[in-house]
Length: 226
Length: 226
DNA sequence: CCGGCAAATTGACGAAGTGTCATGGCCGGG
DNA sequence: CCCGGCCATGACACTTCGTCAATTTGCCGG
Image (cartoon, rainbow over all chains, first blue to last red):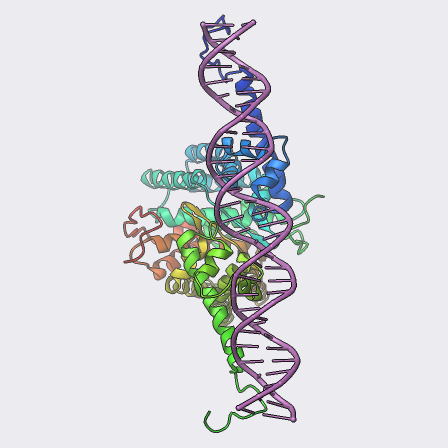
């Protein structure tokens, strides 16, 4: 089969018939348009028509690829989840101490968010002044993976036998909430955010690094561009 | 009627003309219907028409009271925020040690959530499997108040001079995320949740109470009724 | 008790969005 | 070269949106 991309079929890696290609392309067209529209109008105000209008396609075509606005949103969100999940899992698997487990997790997460701030922001703002967080199944699976890793770590004697469910929740809560503040600041400093979070989990408030607050400009959501 | 509520007016406490009364009543009618509809269909799927249909009123009337679905949602959400904010602020103001500050905050919050789980749940679920968090201006004001209280506490030497912005974010994140897991469990145990959160902030993971996990039934969102 | 005014309710309306489907164009295999 | 099937298309039937002129309803002075 190899030396013949010819007839038969058995798509090599990704089948490259013209048909397959436009299908992939159209999907990407829609996803890109959606990202733009969500950023411009906010998720809440955006409509399927707005998305399709930002595209050379016809309205009916949209529904060949996604069931609804919600589903495009999930796809975008899942891209992020799928990109970051393996990294986090790997970092945690390597950890041999609590310190490593916690520190590496937060550093990886904050660095990713900082790099991908466009997606992160776009996805979190529904309309002016109201932020939104929608946890898709894929994202929730990421949470569960974290909990499983915690349970493993406890079994290995790495962690004290705390409540893995609550601990997972606490990590997730801090990660998302602190990530947002981090993005409000200029310049973004994922290392500082990670230090803060890691120290909090390792030793509580008393162990926190002293304030360095790079004068958060009380900036409303808007200021990033710079 | 009786002893001449006669002419003039000067509304006693809350004006009780028939006019005023129906206005209050209609507003409440809409809010109650909205709560029900949001619970039934999820916030995302609900429409203004659905809400008004669950009411004896006409569609146009809705807009005399609220600008949009979003605004009803905010009103419901703000009821909660307005109820809990003063309590939290008061608790924090009384604190004379870090322990008190942290412990009382979390206990108050989790107890409130446990009591008001209906609103909390209703408001957090957009559709099956996707949770949502919308922070209205009123809620955000609550966050800012927390930050201000932290700054005050630092000034008073009660807290080490940590980054108040990040600390506020961490507290908020843990509070919301752990609250949700708490509600998944049977029975609800706000005290345990508060212990967990408080110990985390006071001493880090190593200070956490040992697992007691009342066998969380892997319950999907649904199970509460009991 | 009446008349009239203002305030609030009503439901119909035009604009726009939703998801579907018959149609037709185009790719790919024979 | 031709045909079968896949998929893009955009019109369609239906729903929702927010508005507004007409109407009802409570309020007040006479």
